[in-house]
Image 1 (cartoon, rainbow, N blue to C red):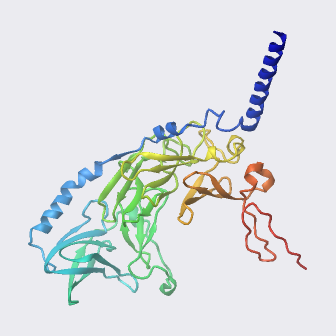
Image 2 (cartoon, rainbow, N blue to C red):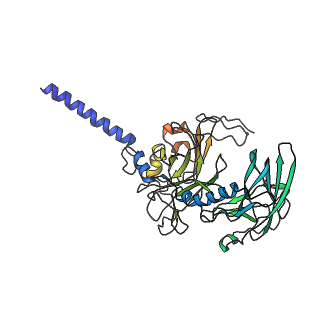
Length: 431
């Protein structure tokens, strides 16, 4: 009996010691941290779904335009023209007409000066029915729009139409650039291109080489403004401009027609000032399109303690979250548990502050950046394992298991190229 008691005591002590060792090793990690949420909790907090509020409201407009095109009463000489066809893009117009023979159409909004004309080809196929998106109109102006129609034999016909637009609203006009000198020979803008200016909040605008506003949306936009692989535009907006939360993500076009609309719960809303009386956002800095056409978004997890340290993959079709990457579960716990560098009024810790995502097709990985950790890192997207770290911190400040992932700096004196990660930099004697 005593022998059994002794053996039991030894086993119990072993279990206790093992537990203490485990706690020492990972006690400050997500295993014991109640503020680290599970994947299911994060998905619930995000609460993403597809809705059709805007699409439904646009159905009558689209039906009207289809009816006009099918009426056979509009020709290239007398086309159907509708400025701002979907109510959110005042410097655009929809032009509809039919031709007797199948043709291709090229459209040009004539610029006021050199290298400010906006040209585009409408579709790749020859057709008798033409639906033309005219983009890059000047505000409060009689715009000249040139149409070039080319048939299969290569014969060209030309038509110029005039499109009148309204003046810019005061809020938009105040954003106009005053260009004192423009050397267009050194610009990458050239013909048919605009530079888009997207502030942290409110109206996005597109300007030409003269700094003139040639496109804007009446929808407020925050941070996210990307062109997708299908040519559509992705941006983050609100259900209404008067609302305080940016929680609607739209797949639209530059004419304002909406193709997909994703709405999020407000549980993960966040802003820089931590003041709930000002505008807050769901996707705080970046969104990219993945090779499978799903969307990868930078978000907060919706917990009570940490912000701006999570990514979610959103199904393009369903709007549901299909993958979660919580950076607290990948990086050393002391980075967020002892973080004190920045303060927020709400007491939450913005320890990582992710700014951007870039997808690397060569090895199915993503490169992300952290403002508050002075860090750039690469993750295997399938496994979420860290491939390398580019950090301002010295190697000694990283736990051992992370040191092999640190990139080594090139020798600035010898001009050596950067060595592979985890290997010591080669030193060369210099006189």
